[in-house]
View 1: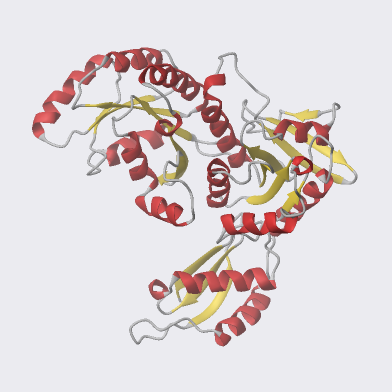
View 2: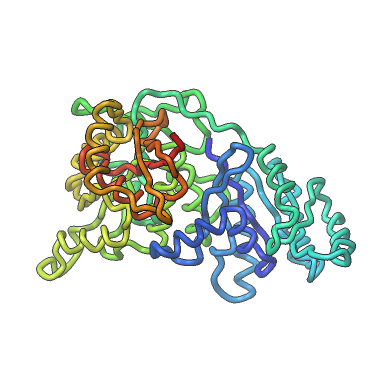
Length: 434
């Protein structure tokens, strides 16, 4: 079950600032260096031991003021359908507006937990003024300042109380999800793989009602395909398809072991694809990149598959040890190759390395290229062990764990990748005091 916390409200009430505070400024900086657009709309947060995805709906509205109101209404209805907790943000500086009243009216009808956040409360005068928002009728109302962060701790305590503990789906089979932007060909691929005779497995303990798990077993291969795209509720969300599909992608990523990220060969890897890629990476999921509709690309003389692939790896750096397959879902070209790679990535993600072998190989690599000294102090790494996590993670025990630079951490990750097969899988490298 994936926990999604959606922030809704009028434009300019401070949703993005608040969002950045929840996901941590650090991530915003990391993402900007790796070429992700600044208007990222979703990211990971954790509080009180619970991890959840925060969605800032502000990034999904373009257009004029009258478009705004319709777009905000449709976003609120999608959030009511898809999110676990809804944060409704208003602004003390402008007071209660008609649009606030309208959104409040929609939100009062839902069974989902709704927390009202009165933003920009940063002095005692505003604290008094904020009291008028109790009139909107939400029992859980919080006065905060996104800029200074005051009040956010109590709010997050309340949010995590409403979140379910994540229950993994009970199944020994690998779980694959095809993710990507709308109209990229996800359902064509699902249909090509599963054909008509689908054996739908929805009675697995812990399966959420908004995804179908279809069991695939042909040609000696078995896995579960998580399909979230095909389930549309009655409400029409066509005008906000991007927002809707993002909510669905988040859920699919959460439930999967390996994500088959599909992009359109004619459009290349767009900002939205990058966002989905980074989210899967931060969730430590296996990733296979599928370039669909390659048969439609003109001018393959100058734009060869090799050049195209090099460009993609460049975009994905630093994590670019990912299988890339050029497919056509409609023509069923190389779709089984894609599945074989996904199964390999699944194996890589569950790979356990013997401690003796790990130390033998990695200590030699460290000796060849020792960590740089920090202010005259020599950093010595004594021992390495693989952690008992659901994805490959390694602890390096040393005398000054805080003084190891990112560049050296990358070196160690590259050495692990060079000697052991972790293609398609994010690796965790941690330094511990010995």
